Structures are given as C-alpha cells and as structure tokens.
Amino acid sequence: SNDWRAPVRIFNVTPIFDYITLKDNYRNAVQLIGGEWTSQAIRSTTVVYWLYDGGDLVVLPRNTLTIDAGVKIKIAYDHGIYVRGFLSMQGNSAKPITITSEHDDTVCGIGAGGESVCDTDNDKTASISQPGDWRWIEFDQESDPNSSIRHAVIRYGGQNEVPGDNHWRAPIRMFNVVPILENITLEHNHRNAAQLIGGNWTSQILSSKTVIYWMYDGDIVVLPRNTFRVEPGVNIKIEYDHGMFVQGVLNINGNQTEPVFITSAHDDDVCGVGSAGEAICDTN
Image 1 (cartoon, one colour):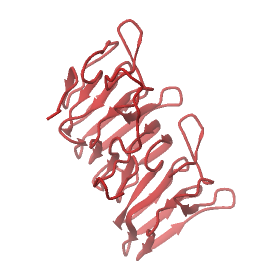
Image 2 (cartoon, helix red, strand yellow):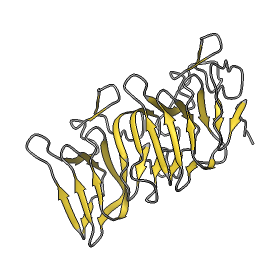
Image 3 (cartoon, one colour):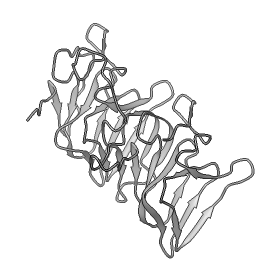
C-alpha cells in the first residue's frame, strides 16, 4: 500500500524531543498521526514534525492546540489541520512557525551533534516541492474566533480538492468565523492568502491588515439581521465568478489613510505583510 511511517510517532500526546539525528528513515521526522486531538502543545524547535496517517489533525471543540515559536511542521499530501476548537500559533519575527511540504528540504531540524537534519523525505537529493503538496489549515464555524496565527511561514499548501478539476484552495481557510491572522509569510501556495469560503455568513469582522483575504468556493451571503464588517486597511481579493450578496448589513469602514481594497485575485499591486515585514504581493 506504500503506507510507510516515521520512526517516532505520536497521537494525541506530545512528549519532549530535543536534538535527534534522524537519517535513513522513511521520513526523517517525528510523525503527528491525524485524527481527533484534545488539548496539546507542540513545542520542540530542534526536530521536524511530519503530519501523516489518519487524515487531517482535528482540534476538537473546547480543546486547544498550541504550536510554539520556532516549531517546524511538514505535511503530506491529502493532509492538513482542521480546527473545531482553539488553535494558538504564536511565532515571532525571530522564530516564526513554519508549515510546509514534506518535500521542502530547505526547512531543517538539528541533530544530536548540532548538524542540520533537512532531508525529511529521505530521497538523498534536493526535493522539488510544488504548490498544493498538502491541504490547508481550516477554521470551522464551530471554532473559537480567538484562534490565532501570528508570525508564521506557510508554504506549498492549497491542494486540489478533486484531482483534475482545477479546484485548488488556499493554505488557510475559514467559514463563518474570522480568526486572528498577523504577519504570515505565504509563499509557493496555490493562493498566497487566507481564504474566505462562500456560503451563508452570520455577523463577522475582517480586521487583519497584514494578510490578503481571498474569496473563493461560492459567494459570501450576509444573512438577514446580521452584520459583516470590514475594518480600515483590509485587503480582499476575489476570484472569477465570485462576489458578495448582502441580505443583512455590510459596513466597509475604510478611511483616507487606510482604505479598504477589494480587487482581483490577479492584482499583485495589493500586498500583505509577512513575518519578517516583507511584502506578500503574488497572491496567485
């Protein structure tokens, strides 16, 4: 079945890992097994974590997954993180959190002798990563709106949901909930943005000035007796054949110094701000 594993595997528990030389294994990493997870904290900055087996890692309602600054997670094809509870990813400019493809050998752990451990997929060559190598981080409408991703580097996500139908995604997705997103370096994904999934939305606020919001997977419908607010400085890019239908209240509150931008997914003149303060412009 080609269903190989890593030499260290964990499910719904996070032991301490420091300075492990991983080499000549199927995957030179610590494996996060997918499935339903209760409250846990992923903390090691010297190993690479690899998400595979059991499907998406699901953060259950009323539970918290904490990912500390400097943590590196590589994700296999057809896998991602699905948030129904609370996700706290608190990187910083010196130690961003990295989420990337299992083939991305530019992201390394540190071995027992202080050496770099980079060849996660153990192919002994420089691997070639591609946009859509893994799924996404998705926030369900049940998830805690205070969930946050701060100072992260997210690469090579946005897998095609149905291979062959050109129905690709972004590496961060949200439906009828708006988590806190700040200073995220989005690069080499199908769309370098945070995706607003279409459908019926209740009262929500778009407030991040440092990420691009990308509207795809159907029109957003603001339901009657609900308010959808867009704060100053927010940037929204919209895909072909998509838009917004307002049955309730829409407040777009730009000002002279911080206008709200609503534009095409192909408009690279409108940019976000990455973890190191760099401009993130190439949305498509």
